[in-house]
Length: 634
Image (cartoon, rainbow, N blue to C red; front, top):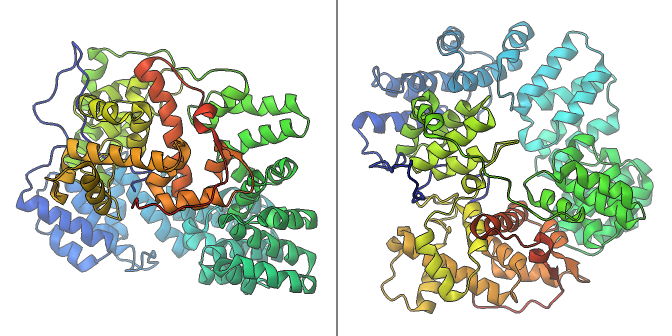
């Protein structure tokens, strides 16, 4: 299934208004590619693979191409990286890079080039040049670059403890460490800024994700490295074995071992996870747990409804981990209330109650407030018209028409920087008028004080979807909440596993549903048709809802991960739990995020479409253990 993080172009039948005029051709309508366009796309692919000779060859064919800066970038970039994506310390492209940065300063693509260049300078340890360029890196969203910046500070005499402190705020996910972070850990260790145990913890966090070579580069061999491997492979066996051998390890390593085993037991929804994390907590050293273990410690306690451990686990979280997700603020408030500190719990809800997300909604309800749709702020034609002249939007539209969504999003989002709320709403309305509805949602989502939820939660294809939903008694707000999460209303969206269309229907699922509902004319090619996709997707959604006893939470999870998994997760409960706890403890990251977003979306869609919102807690309901019975649903 396509996740929420998928942000690209889509079609939408615009709601009629006096001012709005439909373009004769949607901005994202497929472009009839020229020979030069096809060469450009081939050049882009060569650059992606860091095939420098091929990129040079193709770029030479496009001397006057419309997107000349991209041709230049795609020619230079492969010279900076090897085939494995690692920055090259030695390259003959220095003058080309500096010329590009000077010529295109202030553009989205120059910022991308500067990101690449900083990785090269960091690899070279050319701190003088690095420090000159780093302040100009606008997005500053590359973890490895951040680690090189810390290396530079350390090399120039900064107090090592300060560098180590900032490293803890940056190095949260080993998948993004890159070479910069891998090199930083031993430097901090040699400077005495971190202990050997802290260095091992960084390495262990990588090993937990299967990045064992990276882990060894950072911290050498881990005393509990074999336990990490065992926990990843079979946490139940690892639990039994470590129960027999734990006494042979230091308390520090015992705590680390139980933390890793607890994480993988929790991901299997094994009831022993809470007890294991309690053993770890009693031993201490919680600060040495990986981000994954810190978060799953809370989830294991939630599933066991062990509120004291929920409280303690959140209190001992790395502050950067705790602050990156409103989940931990909400559940800390709940834990405080459950342990007799109601006033302090409400203080936590106050911190996030104004956020328009799953936990912001729940926090408002804990404060006795209903979910309300903010007053709609409208924009005028005079405010919308200038958006058509914005260079980033013009370029983005062309990329979308060429189905180059990554580049389209880069240009569009760069243009949004520094916009006021009113300008963002004008840009979102412009996107709606040219039928770039994923950009409508993405842009409207950014406003802080002035909002238009008809743009955040648009209702495309309403004329088509309403009769389908009515015929099978499917809640329209929930269906829209799911489509917004699945495809952002991109009719031609296709996922990596082959799901397609507005409702991201898998071919086998479509075939099954078509047969069940008597759609005898169905062929796989028809899955691209709007009405066919909505019909099959809606009917399947209704089937999983019936199969899962009318629970929107379970059915949403089933739509994303499959009915058998949703049933298994329910079966593994040892007592009824509120829907929010069930959602937060779903083992799959994608499905966990998906379910929370779908349920939150549904609440807002209800308000946008009918003016009436239903309590999110009421929608989530209670999930009760039940033996998993195999169904025939795919």
